[in-house]
Image (cartoon, rainbow, N blue to C red):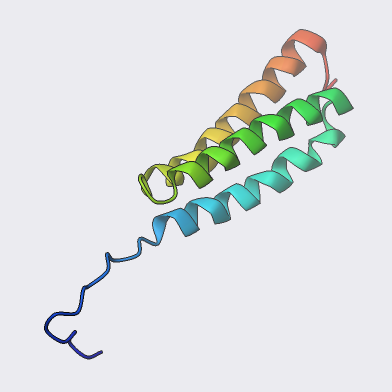
Length: 95
């Protein structure tokens, strides 16, 4: 890789973390979408709406906060696990 010439502006380095975070979000989509085997259809809609909100937040954080995008798949899995277990305990979804 060559050195930039004098007078040429050097752009900021591109962070890989938003790409990793969004790949994680893609994985959690399938976790939420396949939840129809465990929960009623309306609960899958709620889970996918929460996932969509996290995805949009990831788009918003992409440039200003690239490191935060890594947390979104973790939050998505924790929400999924918590809501499915709460539904199983309260509504007896997974008998």
